[in-house]
Length: 266
Image (cartoon, rainbow, N blue to C red; front, side, top):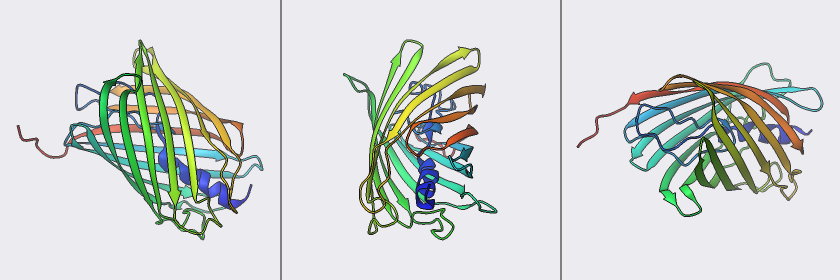
């Protein structure tokens, strides 16, 4: 696999989100995880509250080389239905001696509906990714990306369902990374026993065109979650390719609802 493809797959982890989404939390101190999978749910952090997400992903490619992603995300509730997300990652490509800083992204999730016909809880998530990562080391794409994610979340009895569809446009000439790309996700989650939950997801990146065009990817992700406290959850699991150049991977991480960042006027 060419290095640009590996870099793009690792940097795509900036999008990693929830595998065990749930209804919009009534208690603002209850975590609303947006990791470890590609999908995200339509819920938003309560106004004035902050959540931190940390993780690690260990990738193994078909040529037996390895890569590592260390994603971090901060989420801040700006309004009752609006959340600011700040995303970054440490990236280590195969052969690298240490991880370097990857590209930096920001997004604003806007929850438009909580019980709309067909769409259920529905949100829009526009994002901008900046070329802060090193292209020499492969930790960055060297492009400024704008994207939009459409998010539809549903409660199916004891299960949750999240559906995502996204489009990304990149600056640059398209020689190193594709100018446009899309992805889709179908994610289920639920409780297993007590504080232990589970998540499973099917996701795909359709084929891209141009000089840096890449084959389509379809992969699955699954693993357990653990609710240590209402404000702290942990997760672990594996990612397996169905088709295309998706590496096999293991992941570990957690989400911490830090608390209220500023007082809310009543």
